[in-house]
Image 1: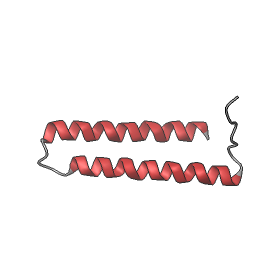
Image 2: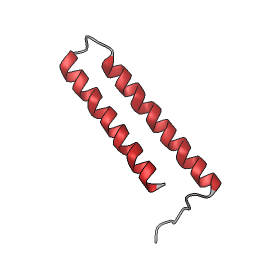
Image 3: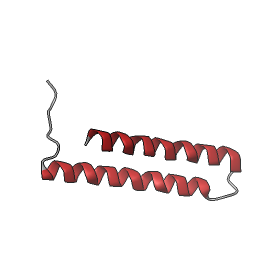
Length: 66
């Protein structure tokens, strides 16, 4: 589960980086920045739902602060 979450975070950061790249390169003349940011939002929501599902199924347990 840790590997899946780590990969998802890397994909989210990669999408954010590509949005920045498209913003700087296209100067707002195309919608590639919007598409990259929409992908980032979709990945973030998917990761959140995956974490909720994994908790519900017992794959991950809360540990709290010690």
